[in-house]
Image 1 (cartoon, rainbow, N blue to C red):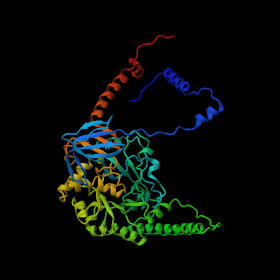
Image 2 (cartoon, rainbow, N blue to C red):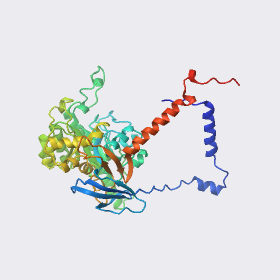
Image 3 (cartoon, rainbow, N blue to C red):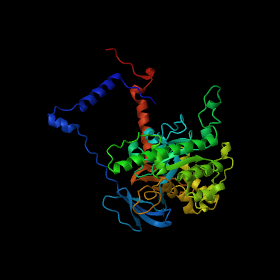
Image 4 (tube, rainbow, N blue to C red):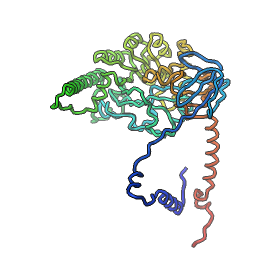
Length: 472
């Protein structure tokens, strides 16, 4: 609803803000001191004791009637009959379940731009530069128990942009959402999305098609990019060696923002997350990575992963896929619901992802399906949306399970999280509450009352409804 305000009110408000903002006369020394920005003091983390919960630790089994203390943003204690420190909030979770926050390893949420598809290689582009912390789906994901997501570049080109791992701290600036210590990553893509065979744009007469248009062209793009990255790395290694020897005449090579991320891949400092569907293209990428001496961290989607499960395991590569989404294009026709179970039985680190701003709220149900299709245990199913995702993002020492010392990213559920009848009641990130169902319901009522008051306000009435005013 668009609010209509009197011009006189607007002028009065602007004048009041200007008067409040106007500084008093200062001496030069005082003025200089006033220009120095005050050091921001981090707000103290709340302390919360969650009592009598059924704790699904994911890595250490199920703990009945157990207390968990969240303190200084960490999981401080786990045990029975814990004593609440002074000033702590206490939550009675009797009959409820506590589990780690859900991790989505493949998302495009919060990104104001998804693809920089103008070139075949756009490794210089960064998702963190286009994050939108006000995207409403952040809050909806929190309501589904999700606390961490991996925001990836799209699949328009063979080598896309750099990813961003974020904690969903709704209401905070994007800079506070970036996950400290998460391994940098980059998006690769294979198959039909890159060749654009189904794109209306490339079917138009006279439109120049972007290279590559075939899978063999995609392999050449990858090989060419890493050959150039190797040469670039060699130049810098030689320069650094010369400087280390005291050579005063050494000249640094020109920086190349396209090749720097690929050098990090070669050095094992940046993860590769590769969009892929067919077994043949996944094998191609694994072989090419072996040729250049790096490891593909995850194959994303990977619906035919079950066909080459031993090869994926031998490469030390993980796979993040859907529970039961397939046949929406030719590449996805050979998908089966047992993909994750087969991969895990071969030792492949596997996860379920959403690739959707909406599906992200139902990842707990997708994990439950794996117990039906493949016979995963409860802990194995939970790992596909918690610990395994943390490992694929290099943050398994911080999140993904309920263990002392890890970040207090936990969720209280009203029933077992693998049940279709369950839903989160409270979602914590670093010990702070970012979603609470009771508070949400209360705010909805408050907002409804506020809306009604605004609609009744005189400035928001239609002209014919406003009372006549005397002419001055």
